[in-house]
Length: 488
Image (cartoon, rainbow, N blue to C red; front, top):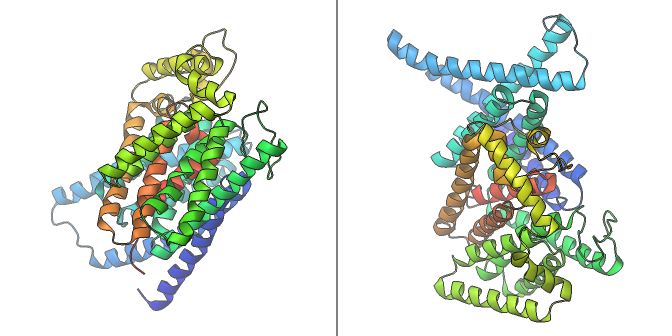
């Protein structure tokens, strides 16, 4: 690789790096900023990896050795042909669905005015798929993570083109949700690759959480938040810059393990520890004031996962601390928080929130059993829900259980592939924790893994993976946990 091309790649990484910092900082406050900088970073990443893919093609063309027999040629051509048919069909279906949704293409599909744009868009998609697959294959993620990423893309393609009952909905969801989230993960894992970048990324992340905590306290006092002027919910539940208190609770529960990891694994100087402890206490106070029971449970799961890596003595101490904090909260917390804690178990299935969820889960389970292998189609839960819900239930909602919704939309195959991906991320983070000699990197990857555990636990009772800011938060942390960090 010549020096000019190397400098170009470094410049692309630098541009993407600062776009990612901006994206992470605005996750809790501005969807539009997140979408703009996610799109820009994806464009620059595709430009860089497109050049790398072209270099790879030229290198391998020179070293290509023709097969010596027809059988050897068949072994090469057969899988490539099957893959090509799969990609061509999927790309054409997605192109047709997306273009027809935004433009009027009534008439003959083979007319030049219709056929040409669909063909161009399909070719463009095939090129992007090739770039992504080649980038994944040439990355240092390890076989399990590479295979799970590729399988996740394949299952998403199948359930958005071959098996979907709502082709237009599934095609747009595949392009503008699933692939965008997956690309955010790939970009962060690729670009946040040095201890300095990890430090900057974590610093921006914690700063965003700090301002969100300040916003939550301000909302509790003033009655509305600073950034978007959302009112406090039911005169007691803070929402921050999120529309719902549960979403704010999820953001806080997911963010908390990272500053705690920096403190407990001695990743920073002792003077800065006090600042991180103050941020953690601020976030914990806001988490209580959201009254989000699922977020509380998610934080406890992430907290225990984190302390499992501090040694058995600290883990036992963490259990004692959690018990004391819970006892003190029950004893001295405001009546509303006591009621929420006390009613978390005694009112299950009786209060409106849990009764609604039980009804939705039963309906979602029926949807899954009706099409258990590949589901009803990517992102089709709400559009299909009406056919399965009880006649007396008037709402059209998400499943409020991300795993059940994934199963209903993409079947057991899609759910298993997603769980495989999550397990691969956690295994990679744990491996990096034990193999790295940099304290900051160790704390960052295991803290990110604890954040992922918090989100996944909360996802059993909420819609985290289907909310734009929370989904971006989850996939960003997956990128940090999987980042191939090397010494400067």
